[in-house]
Length: 44
Image (cartoon, rainbow, N blue to C red; front, side):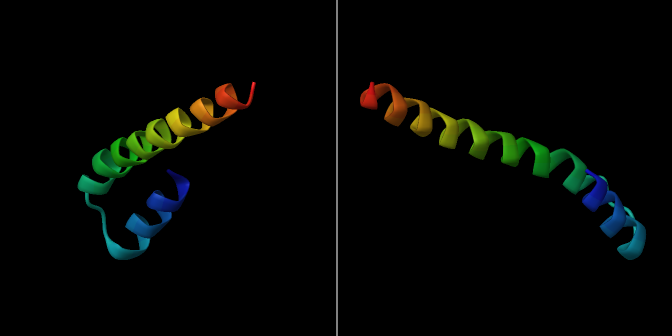
């Protein structure tokens, strides 16, 4: 969020990235986390 604030301060403010980027990032984290948990459970 701090990096997004710095970019918006330099290149003018838009509200779109503050809504879209965290949602997309959370989606990717959930997908990757599912794969990591599955791999580690299969190792046990």
